[in-house]
Length: 326
Image 1 (cartoon, helix red, strand yellow):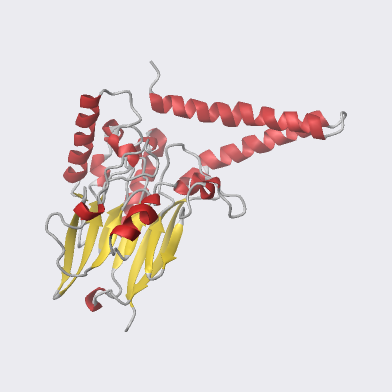
Image 2: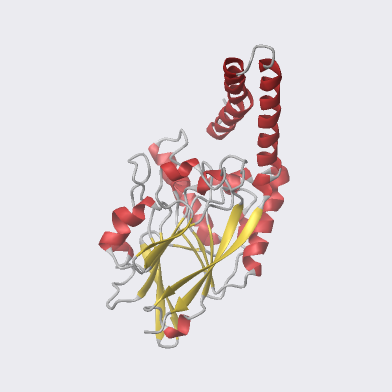
């Protein structure tokens, strides 16, 4: 029986290698003079195959390190210049066989930034915890002085498998166990306080909350900021939430988190002259967005369920916090 991930890949390849060329051939036959349409169709097909090949064998293997800043009057003085590496949507199940080197490169690049903290904003897996087989040792190499923090993305709940309810719960528990085994602090509607002398900031992590009811909707803003202990003052809060749609739906109206870090969109893994189809679905799909002094940064991801990227390379992001003098 074919597994679901293989089926997804087969559908992708059939669409890109068969259906898309047939559509363009039909357009050429309709739009071009009769004596030229076959040559036009052949040229379109060759161009499509070239683009697909580039996206699979070159574009998907690209990895960029982006530098961004977030400035706030509320940032405690001791954290001026604090650096956080964000990576998201690793989808390590795609880093199999000859692509395993890409996972090691990602880890080495993150560690080389020598940041104060590392955060992972969800979708470590493709389908299930089995995607982590043979990769735990590599991911355990991630280290930062203030720790590695992670949250779950929609793919980390095994919702795209054919498992029954009990098996799915067991698979989720295994994923959570492995992340903790790697030395990561997995935040499930929880927060942690990082201190510098008398100053502190909060790293808070929500479970996934998607606008669509097909997505896990387990994120709870109030629980996140009250567990393991209630926040009694007005601290500087960095919120981790996989799905950026949660920012406007839940985070902005329900709490005072200064900076939210998300992923999920992958930037569509495709861009044409700066436009990506995912921008039709998400208002915040890649980069930094502001609502007053509050902001969300959406990473376009380090990997992908489908091994294809075109003008939308994988990324890790170094976020430097800056204090604005009042």
